[in-house]
Figure (cartoon, rainbow, N blue to C red):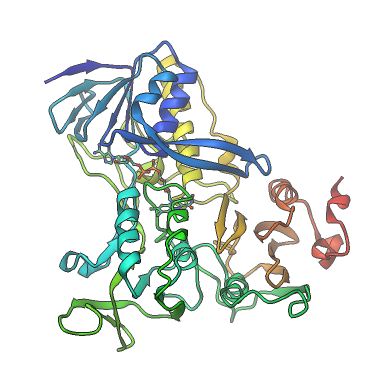
Amino acid sequence: MDNLRTTYLVVGGGIAGVTCVETLAILHPEASLVIITASSLVKNVSNVSFYAKTIVKFDVNETEANSLKKIHPKLEIVYDSLKHIDTKNKLATTECGTVVQYEVICVCTGGIPKLISDSKKSKRILGIRDTESVQEFQKRLQSGRKMVIVGNGGIASEIVHATHGIQKVWVIRDDYISATFLDPGAAEFFQDTFKNKPTEEENPKKTILRRHVFSEEDTVVALNKDLKSAALGPDWYRKLESIRNESGEQELEIIYKVEIKSVVEVKDKEYPLEVELSNGRTVTCDFVVSATGVEPTVNFKWDKAPKTGPDGGLAVDEYQETSIRDVFAAGDVAHAAWRHSPHWFQLRLWTQARHMAAMAAKAMYARITNEQVLQDFCFELFTHCTTLFGYRVILLGKYNGQGLGNAYEILLRTTPRHEYIKFVLQNGRLQGAILIGETDLEEMCENLILDQIDLTPFGDDILNPDIDIDDYFD
Ligand SMILES: Cc1cc2nc3c(=O)[nH]c(=O)nc-3n(C[C@H](O)[C@H](O)[C@H](O)COP(=O)(O)OP(=O)(O)OC[C@H]3O[C@@H](n4cnc5c(N)ncnc54)[C@H](O)[C@@H]3O)c2cc1C
């Protein structure tokens, strides 16, 4: 049994754990630092580019944990799983019996996908979380003729987009696709793109501009808390794009407002799985891909457990500290329990894992050096930058009117197969936006949301394609 003593201890080799280590290495290079990682490969971030102050795009890669020593020569790496934290005596024990005495600890153990309830009964029900599960999925794709996809967030959407040559049945709970990130209008924009691309003559770029004032009857699109998330980076689906089962048919059927009731393996039938839906219909297929959300991974024991949020995540304050002093948490395992600024909310995404972990590192350093720390500016505005169905998608602030009740207006500009722009306004001020396509509006929207400029004098011109709105604010 080894015994180690350290100032800083970080647990987990995902984006959060690695960001925490990297930030501590910069802030306090002379201090001792230990990372416990269950896998020898860790995640890191490269090619960081800024669309605006808070809108950042980057690549996520896998790298040998050993390479972290380049940024912090004194870093000790324990290749093991955390088993127990004794918060009173500040001791962390791993499965193999290594005991680490720490001064401050940051738990970054991520999340595990929730699989549909019958998943234990069949190996033909797959969840996507890490490189291994993507490889298993690739194998199934190569030989499969028909799959059922369950879930309506980013992962399910990418699977639908990136797979070819196989019949697909997409089962969703909502009444429109990709509900985590989109509203019904944007879903319609994308659904158009599922059809074959038309020629320029067939598709003159026709821009539609519309203002909609919400009334009591309107359904406010609720934030889907079941966002799929875990250890993969944003480009995982590219691995699927290269696989084409040319012999299979290319077909997509979307079944709305249903859930899966049961999945049964059958013998001597055309397909080995029968999937029963809540509407009474049975769909047959070769395999099911389940992308229905994650649960925070708290897979170790404590002498005294800290407070948790309704999602089971470790509740943290604005400095990422749990209810137990000197125990911090960041990334998918954390529940953001502080009072959020008006245009930020938690969604388990790589950007937020990175922001939370950098914040945790700053607060841990401040604790050790007795300095004051302020919450980082990035928590002022929710931003998410992704690609859906081959289009750039930028989500800002309350992009689906989350938490705004019915008292808001939507201003919409859409050019089929080219762009979809939605502004969410309240009292004439921009609260959120969805920008799909190369709109070039990211920076302006960021400023309008952060500065809460009154846009009433501009009326609908704010999205008039014939007027360069940027000029207004120069
Ligand atoms: C298929 C897929 C696609 C995604 N696509 C996107 C996307 O396009 N954009 C986006 O923003 N987000 C996406 N996400 C979500 C994103 O990957 C997560 O939000 C992010 O990875 C969370 O980082 P993390 O470090 O908190 O957790 P993780 O990346 O889950 O890392 C946790 C680490 O802790 C380790 N660990 C767990 N328990 C222990 C223990 N007891 N001891 C030691 N180590 C332990 C795990 O092995 C793992 O290495 C996607 C997720 C999935 C699954």
